[in-house]
Length: 197
Image (cartoon, rainbow, N blue to C red; front, top):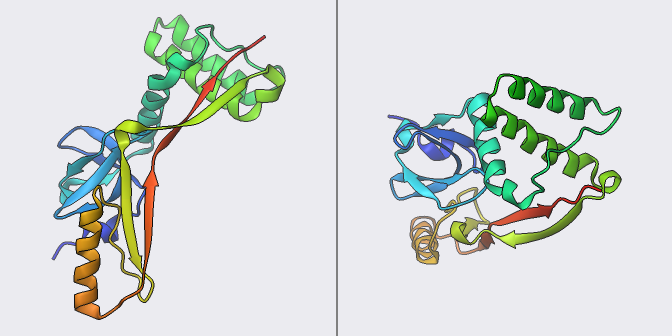
């Protein structure tokens, strides 16, 4: 008998779904399906659990870059300049220069996005970068989850509260357990406005 998806992947694991040719974060199960969320946020989708596999490092990187690119319109159109004496900035700027020399616009944009992300994380005060706000990721919606406090069982993330309640009712009927921890979570995107003097 095949091992269940619940035992194969932890919540948040980045997996590859061959049916949609997409990479997503594993969020739990809904009935017989695995629930996946796009890397960086967005509308979840259902996938056949037996077809999923962990994403390769390259697939994870590409998905992360695509997510960053989708938000890059919030940033200044000017390419970021590397910070003096920062090896990471120099490496990323070198990748950008190589892509530019090859006339590879996609790779050049990817390098710019990665350089901006690095600078927001490590050089924000030095460069005068202004960080705006954590804003709701409305298309992603909310998730509901409950966990039994008397054993390790849990519902996993579900899209609708009724699904969680149905799981809790069944678990109580099977085990007699009566105490649960309930969680409601939503998704947010940290958007930054870049202003480089």
